[in-house]
Length: 394
Image (cartoon, rainbow, N blue to C red; front, side, top):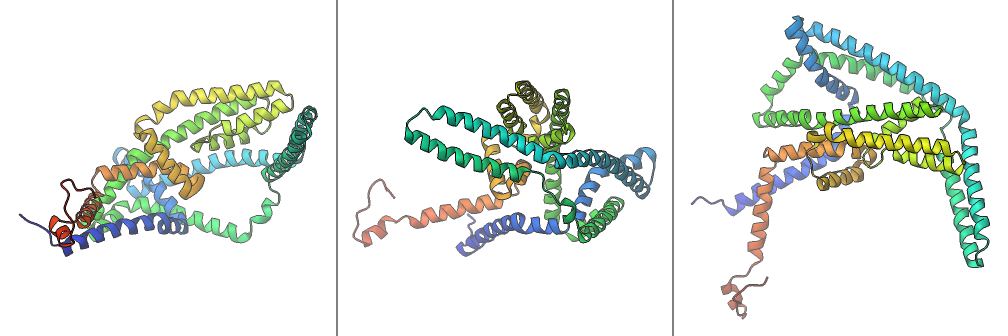
């Protein structure tokens, strides 16, 4: 029977555990900083990853060389992106500038309605005994201060243009140029890059890299595709509803609500329900009912399409999903909420593929060794003058 030496066994256990700990430190603290520093190249790699199937199609079907097809595709993608961004940003900027000018009136109207409601409640509470009135006065004074501070903080900040200095513009221009060039070379020289990596990296690292990429394509790609489809459908529904209700800045507001709906645990109700409450306070019942109808329709649409679009792409039970969302929020805030489930799906796929087997076996052996070390044999107990029990209770 073959057995490991204790020194060798514990050395291997220590190495496996240390590798996992170092990997966690690397992926949670070091890698994000590196990715932010090289963000133009990260975006270029993502663009190349998405565009590669189209370049391959041009190579096979249209018989265009990879470099020529890459140039055509990048020019086409840039043209489409610039056109879409121009349309979106033009409308968002126009409505945002208009909102900046009308923000003081909106703030005054909203705060006035809330103050009026508080005054009505105070008049009603004036009939109660003195301790209740004193408590209500303190409570509503605090509410008034909180609402005033919140509305002031929520107002659109002024002096935006002053924050955009020449250094930022120069950095953005250089980053865009670097990103475009990197996208081209990532696509045009893809085979050379992969060949270089296969030649110089160990086979086990390449196999795990391929496993990670497959997991990203199947799980993460499907998850984000489904979420963006849902976000687009919710945007169209909210935009149409706000247009029917005659709401100003409907393009901007619908975009922000759809963006908020993308975040787990938030949704359209985070904006629509408080908005409807404010309309009720202002006695604009028609608008309040309309907003609640728009919110209800959006919720119904989401419940109908989400199982179909997300369905198999997630494949996680509710409890693990909630656990991942909580960890993501604690580690990365709102951004962590977005990426927690995809990252969790990749880790689960890697676990199923046996990537963490050595770590699992190391932990089992370590706990088994600890369990064996803490137990006393009958001979050791007798040497200490103790009588061994028939059923050991330790």
